[in-house]
Image (cartoon, rainbow, N blue to C red; front, side, top):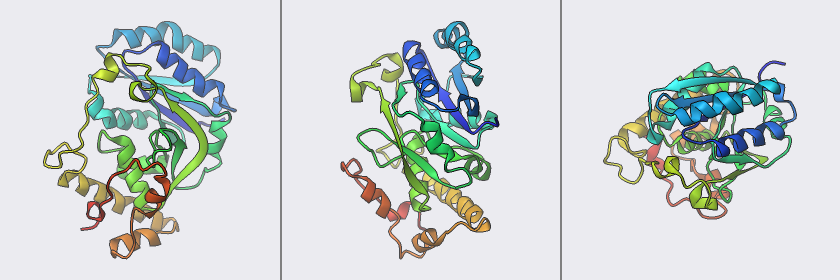
Length: 273
């Protein structure tokens, strides 16, 4: 069977958590032969490399699951998008699924819930983080990567993908549930990898910040490319046209999805010149 879903999985310094994460995907999928898992590891991380080579990859071999391992010079959490972009360039699937080594798939038949959207141009979102309105583990069609030549252009990959998804009105939550087994959520995995995380958000004057004018401009360029692709393929762009005309609130669906009030601001100027 042709590959349907490519799981993008950067990992660093983790063994047990990584195995639990991967097995949760594999054991709860209906068709493992439609999956491939792409691991991204740092060259200076012998822990992850040894664990893959001696334990996890042989286990995947026994189950005939496709995988690839891509080594990186260490890029750090703030450059998560660079891992996602490089792994996407090696992916074969119709869908690119950004995953974490501390995430656990809770839903059986999760792969079917993605595959049923084959042929659609959507940003798919699982239920997690008390139903955070973002797609915390973003799932995008291969055409997304092909059109903008990236999975994301910022390390806040979930925010980048989700905001564009909402502004194009292609964001859709699917009946798949995931536990993010992260220290600040569950108390687990408070390790060196977790403690080393850094974020570029909260200081829009910084050139690395998600809301810096240059990154806003990049998202605007991506929106235009994706909207052009949609129009060329007879996918409705009326919502986006309304945003551009300043007659449509781009965040209307995001607000509806923010059932637990986890977002603090929605700013039209981020996308409209």
